[in-house]
Amino acid sequence: MVAWEHKTETSTGHAVIIAKAPVAGPEGSWMVEVYDSTSSPHGDDSRAQVLDTTGRRSGLGHGVMVFIADPATGAITGLRWSRKAKAITVPIAAGRPTS
Image (spheres, rainbow, N blue to C red):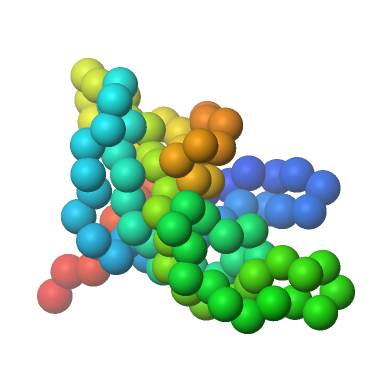
């Protein structure tokens, strides 16, 4: 699970569940398939439900995001909502369940 705080007029942050192993990209970026619930679909998104008020897809689904890691430490330092989205730097927490 990965979570972050990103306060805007319409958001306080987000959390996703990692669906598959990350795939290395350029300059410390990692393409990751994630599961989440959002009204702003990711790249290659599966959401089919359309919201009546906005015409946007919404609900539980999966898509591809990009996480950016510090090359020296491996710490996640930012993200892109999809492969082509603008990168943002935010505090990010990541963890995995153990027995």
